[in-house]
Image 1 (cartoon, helix red, strand yellow):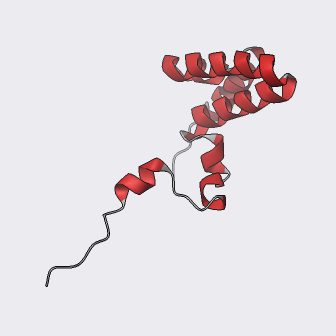
Image 2 (cartoon, rainbow, N blue to C red):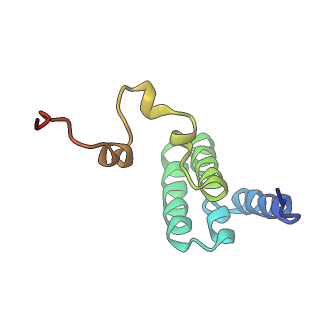
Length: 100
């Protein structure tokens, strides 16, 4: 197994980017769409909920940029509410009578 020696540095830069602006981690990764979306959501969360709101959006942005999945997916919130994420629902074949 080979390891990337710059992996830790890259995650540190992503974390620092999030400290400066919501969506900064996605901007460092080059995903402008996610960066812009998290920036707008971060500003709206700051206006509506203050610091806790912007911290939650920044945490989601950091997790999305480093793992490729959102924070609610990492925490398994879909399973807690008894529903599957939309991607999992689409991947499952429709249940029906089997032809015989």
